[in-house]
Image (cartoon, rainbow, N blue to C red; front, side):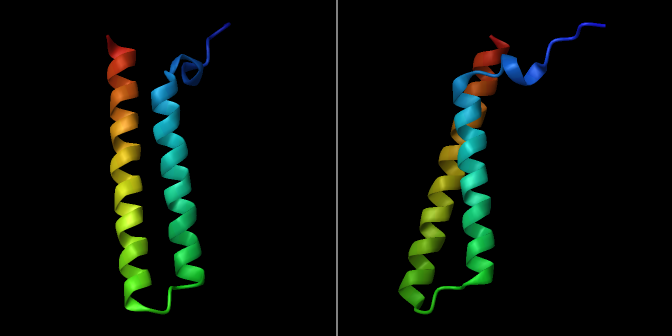
Length: 69
């Protein structure tokens, strides 16, 4: 019953995507606790979180595709 941990087989790109998602979730939690005051700050924070989401998703997909091939 010596099974290998499947998380150890994930490539570094997939781990990068997971880390970016964790940072995004931390930012969302912080935003809900202490929301930005001005409209520009809210828009900037929203754009930054959207960019982080796209980068994280891209890294995760690239890492999982790398694992498959």
